[in-house]
Length: 368
View 1 (cartoon, rainbow, N blue to C red):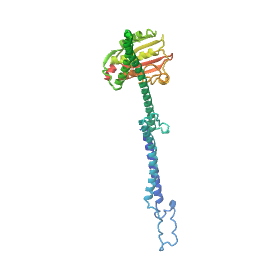
View 2 (view 1 turned 90 degrees about the vertical axis):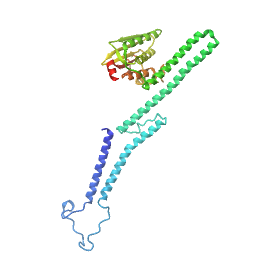
View 3 (view 1 turned 180 degrees about the horizontal axis):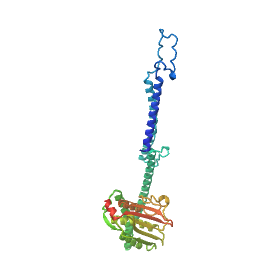
View 4 (view 1 turned 45 degrees about the horizontal axis):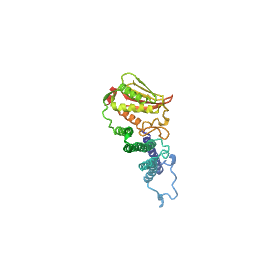
């Protein structure tokens, strides 16, 4: 039973106890004396008043309520008081929650109700905290989406402008067509990559991950990613170290797992300084496949570690990090679709370590 149940129980029980005591006292006070020796405290009855047996005896009864009505009235008043108190106690926070929901529905995502709920320490107080957490998450996601729309529009406007300028220059200077074609191809590839990331994230969010029953050899997959990374970072002089231990076969989609690990490696290369090192390792631990990617960059702000896998989030002052904030979000969606999890920690010596955990082939197959 929860705390809210026990509050209801104790208050109702207390109301009944107080009502019973009030009714009992009223009945006791209304009880008439009965027979000889029934005076107060068992003593003799009081002497008859003067004129006993005369025409004025017995004297007329005082004007008061009939005996059954006084206990009922007393119990009703007490019960009404406790019922009103109980109704107010539970109706006030519910009204507060309703008003807060209306505010959020109206676009006021900064609405919070934690302070107005007081120190209730029950399920309604927990509900208020959950509402504040929900509102904060919605506000953060919408702010991130606004930043994304701004960044995407800016990033698309720039290559589109260059494409238009290159087309105009090709008409004016046909002898430089080869140079302009290379620029057009580069800008087109950049736009294609951005649109592809958006479509991939949208499909994963919609649960359209496709078939996840392929046998994927992570040794070959990680080795291929490392070779491509070495080829792309020759000019930067960043070393790629790979450590692969034991058979590493997962059950899932090779294309999606390749994309997930590659996004982490590219992120590590982007933030590693020239001459730095990116260490990639993969091994089996306790029935799980663990892939780690560690870089030698500046790391991530401690407050951002839990959010770097959220869509549209970019770490850095004011979200100034490079990229669109979609690569690690895609990685998390892919890993979770395979029944795994992903996490990140700052390394003691500097840099960021990202760890992907996936089920082994046997445990993954049993999931499906």
